[in-house]
Length: 287
Image (cartoon, rainbow, N blue to C red; front, side, top):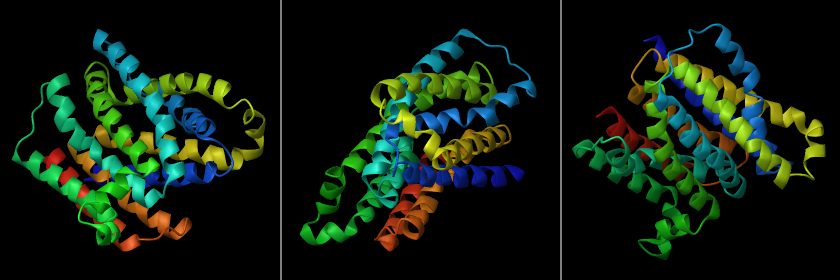
């Protein structure tokens, strides 16, 4: 059961990436941090190419790289915009909406259909998101949903979750037409290259500030690179559904880090909401 350790390490470094990203956003904009997240992961990822067997690559691989890579260029920036504009403990749990959206996109793209557990998972994820803002209930029964949907960070994270539900299907195609490790490395290189023009165009004033902020930017990439490595190790040892279910516990860690490091309020309801949403993810991914 060694894969469980690697899966939890994946969740830990996913959460630490979020924390480091929010710290980096204090001095730099989301374009710089998105670039740093991917660029500074490369020194950890690229050397792996010398230690793995290069798989046979079939045409579906390039389709997956182009589609998923392009979509994840957008999510890399939108994700950081979300955590910049709202509490980690509020927006990160909303990333668990991806499995819910997959129930819509997977039947269309790869012909996978949900069962009764998928419907239970939908209920739990939606109910958990309600609990995240339960304090707003005093303003009406639907007030928690209204407060969530009116929050810019929440809106952006829900958009990211939806885009991920599309890119995840193409990731699956990419894995099937190569190998998990090789695909993970190449798609990260693609995203790094794709984010660079946004950095050069949108952050011309910030470019000069990068050397002064390396202490906050390098950890973002290192944590992301470690997350990718542990993710790829775990995925080679177990089923994807098992890995993703444990990886989503990063939402709970991010809620805790949000309270401990950034002094965010509402810890109890947000922890409870995140746990309920992860239970929904378990229903969808495991069954």
